[in-house]
Image (tube, rainbow, N blue to C red; front, side):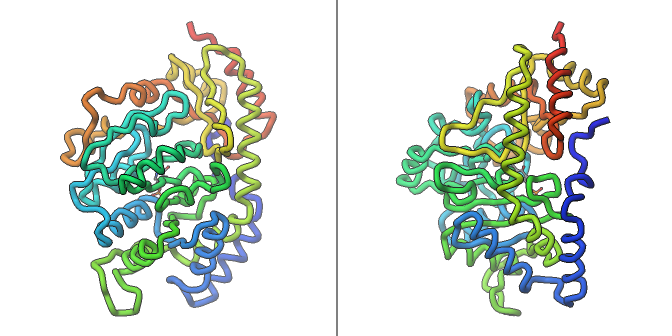
Length: 371
Ligand SMILES: *Cc1c(COP(=O)(O)O)cnc(C)c1O
C-alpha cells in the first residue's frame, strides 16, 4: 500500500542532523525563546526577503496574531469584514472570526482554485483580504492588490502551504502586508510537532505580534497588551533550521513530480491542475486533479494500493461549526465553484513519491473507466 504521505520517510534524510540539533537544545538548558528561535527568525526572514519574522506556535496562531495585532494597532476593528476563499482549511475562517472580525466567503477561480481578485465580494466594511496560496500556488494579482491598498484594505497572506513559492521576484509570504506560515509536520517544511511563523516588513506589526505571542510583553514581567502564549519552542526552531536551507531543493523536487504527473496522466476525464501563471512558481504542496466521479476514482486507486486525500471535502461555510455562525457571510449568489470542487477534487501523493511510483499511479489513472 502506498500511503498518501509517510512522515517517517519524509524525515529519514538528514536524521543525524535532526538528532544533533535536538541534542543541542536538550543539553542547552534553554527551552523557551533564546538563540535557536532568534536564529530561525533571521534565517526565515532572509530566505523570504522580508524584514521581520516572529516564530510562533502554529499556523492558526500566526493568522490569529496578525489579526489581533492589527486590532491593537487600530487598523482593524471588531465587525470589519475580511474576505476569505470559500475552499480553504478551516484555520483561515477560525482566525478571522476568533478575532471578532466577519469572514466573507468568496467563490474561487475554477482554474486556480484560489481567490479571484477580479470578483471579490467587496463592501464598505471590507478592511482586509486573506488570499490563501492553496496547494502552494501563489494567489496573487499585483494590480488588484495595489487597488486594494489604495482603498486602505489590508492583504494578509495565508502562506501555510506555500513556503518556497514565488511571484515575480518576490517569495510568497513577502507579497502582502503580512503572512502566516505553518510548519505542521505534513507541510513542505514540517516541524516535529506544531510550529508556525508570522512574516512582515511592517515594524509595528512585527513588534505587536511578538508581544502578543509572549503574554503581551517585550520586557520580562512588563505587560503592555493582554497577550497570549503562542511561542515557538527552541526544539522546533533547531529542527526547522536543519530544513530551511533545503527549501529550494524541496520546491524543485515537487515541481518535477508535478510536471511528471501532468505529462503522464492522459485520461481525458481527469482534469489536471492548471499550469502556474507565467512568472510564478508553485510550491506544489498538493497535486490535485478533478474527476466527476471522484469517489469512485478514489476507491479504485485504494483497491490498487494507492492512498489519496481530499483537500477539502467540505467547504468552510458548510462545516457544522460555521453554519449559521454570526460572523460568517456568504454572498447571495453562493459559491458554486467552491461547492463543485469539494465534490470533484482528489489529491495524489506528492510528498515523497518516486518517478516509478508516479508512473504507476498515472498508468492506473489512465486505465480508469468512469462508466
Ligand atoms: C495547515 C494550514 C493552516 C494551519 O496551520 P497549523 O499549523 O496546522 O495551525 C492554515 N491555513 C492553511 C491553508 C493550512 O493549510
